[in-house]
Length: 298
Image 1 (cartoon, rainbow, N blue to C red):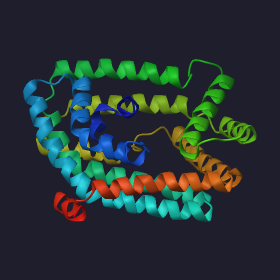
Image 2 (image 1 turned 90 degrees about the horizontal axis):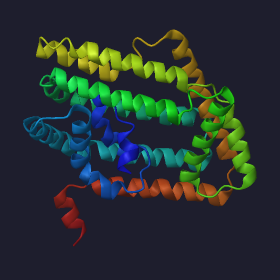
Image 3 (image 1 turned 120 degrees about the vertical axis):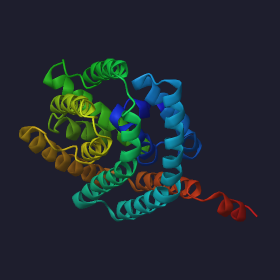
């Protein structure tokens, strides 16, 4: 569970681990979520090679953020998933799939808006040597990205890799698929626009922008405002051609999930609904304050 989260985290967005943990469908949300303070400190240190004083300050700020997220945001996530489950049970449409995508983006923006000032305060203390450590970690991440998405392979192999990843995600949610269903999913996924090469270039752009931002820390207030904009408006500065491709890919991926829903058997749809309900129950339980939990246990 931890390794899957951490390879999704870029150093500027380290606290996104909380949103990923709850909205990415981890089957151990109730067990893993209370331990995210440990995971987050480990991840921040892995990227920045923190000094002991920085670790202590990170723990303090993250603890405050974690409490806010747990009691203020998890109820919203549970309600969001409950609405998603209701839409799923009616049979999803393209609008439903895009509603989920937009809902996750909205919640991410809420998260980073809240955390921007604390993140800025922590980043003010980052040294040139720690930025060097960050860039070395990014280089490792970037090599992994190229390898996992087969960006140096042929177009055909990239499409096959996309199909395998998509099929794996759907199996994780649905469970068993028969051979005919799997072949249809592989064909649909293989026809999606090849997004990951341009996505890799956009990741590099965002890394360059972050380093430029880190060179402008002369004023803490202005730096915090710039960082908040960097977190919240990640589309700014995108190559127009990539932006068009990304929007096309988003629409076609929504259509893919609608097509998948139409080939699922009733028992498979029921399995998906049951899995989503487990997440809802876990989030609801986690969001209860200790006094409420104690009262509920009597």
